[in-house]
Amino acid sequence: MRRGMASGFVALALLTALLTLPQSQALADDYPVRPITLIVPYPAGGGVDAMGRIVGQKLADALGQQVIIENRGGAGGMIGTRDAAKSTADGYTIVMLLTGISLGNNPGYELQKDFVPIGLVASTPMIVVSNPAFPAKSLTDVIALAKKDPGKYSDGTPPAPTVNYFAAELLNAVAGVDITIVTYKGTGPLTTDLLGGHVPLGVNTIPACVSQVTAGQLRGLAVADTRRSPALPDVPTSGESGLPDFEAVQYYGLAAPAGTPKPIVDRLNKELVKILATDEMKKRLLQEGSVPTPGTPEDYTANMLREEGKWAALIKKLGLKFE
Image 1: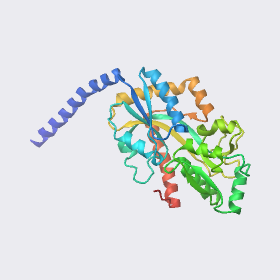
Image 2: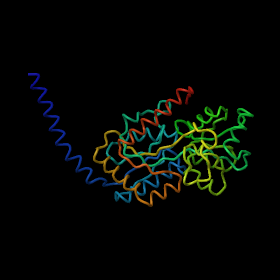
Image 3: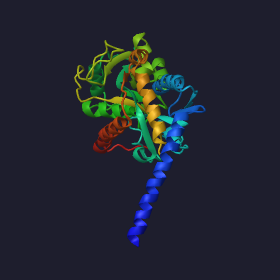
Image 4: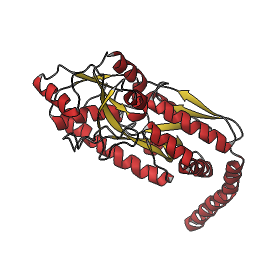
């Protein structure tokens, strides 16, 4: 009797799957039939906002529907990400995720449980920049000044759990210095204060300050990567500056709430990969200081696990606590 019941349950499950699959595929074939909301969980005017608007416009062109950018900043990106996790899983709300977004204090979501990856978009290394009036002309100079007067100098960064913040902590750790970390709501406000001289140093993303560095309004001191940025070829790497262990790369990706139909996720991934493969998009991203990183949803999952694990290990090693 039990065997018969079990067989019945299996048959019912298979039948349900077979009946649901065509409906799900039909939904994807018709998708989208109305505008899509892309949540950017950071303030307008920063590097993440710029990336979201570039990708959003190209997705709109590819899908034939408007992609509305909604900036929901706060708590290092956790507020907007939490909102996205609670959204209806129908493909009409997606979110731009950044490395480290699950590592804050009580974020209210779990990446692996509450989101389904769509795909990676791009990567950009952190850059240490200064106001031109600051006496240091290189990262080596900064370290020398900081060692001479511990606690005297400060650098600005968006708050945890951003890679910017983790990079600032990493800089203190590997250089053996005590530079006070001042947090901002996003890279946009940080760049504004750097330009105004309200904070002398900053750990920023390249897209948020590439134009200011190119124009000489800010000084690029070092890129936290093994290779120089094509957008700022005159700025040395951290290794060239004597800190090979100071590496911090930000990854941008798109995700949808868990439960979003797979055919819709696959459709979005397909369009995203095609967009990132165009010469126009490659050129634009490289000019902004980012490198296109197209791939499958599975590739993005692997990236999440690797990068979140790396920064989680730093948090544990340094005993970092966030409010």
